[in-house]
Image 1: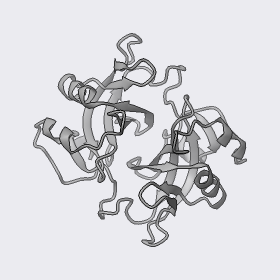
Image 2: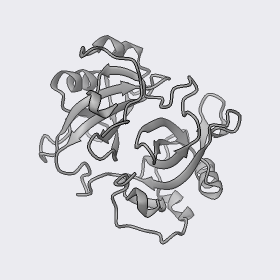
Image 3: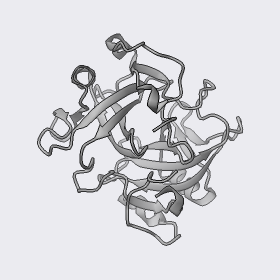
Length: 129
Length: 129
């Protein structure tokens, strides 16, 4: 989908592993990572990455997070098959959040929902569903 | 834009303030909130909300965050004019993250960039820009 990324900055196809040292990890060594589907534009989930999982994500081009409950690296879909093929990875102005653009196989949520964000506190109008 | 929300759950136009007590706030009383532009689908920013800022957001329909640096409520755009009109608000399967669907006036980022996510570590293909 057009317009998901709005920046003139480009690496001309290189992967910038060095940028990891710009990132502000929290006291647990983690940084929040938003996964967005490049085909639908839907925000799929918010998870956390550590330095190692970012390197693995950039190397293998499959989204790899750090599981806070299991305290280990977690390549999304490794057991379920619901992998996320990484199409791009950006960090924000404060260097304390990451946006991962992915092609989602199957569903993103462990509940079986396509996106993890399925509980309304205020309904969005029909035109956004 | 179609397809940003994918759930059959609906409140039939009501606002569910009670759901706030389902949310898992961190040790600072905060929960991460992703702001997404309903017109372009772009992820604009990741900020944090506390209980009070969620109530204010749902009441006034303008995105209100909690500023970690200033330690105070922060209605986005109150000084810059770059307000976010809230179109919908959802929380995720684990109740530890929020998605705020907004109509963005002007730009979301204090740097003047439309989205805060403008630093590539891995470029997205042209078709997503």
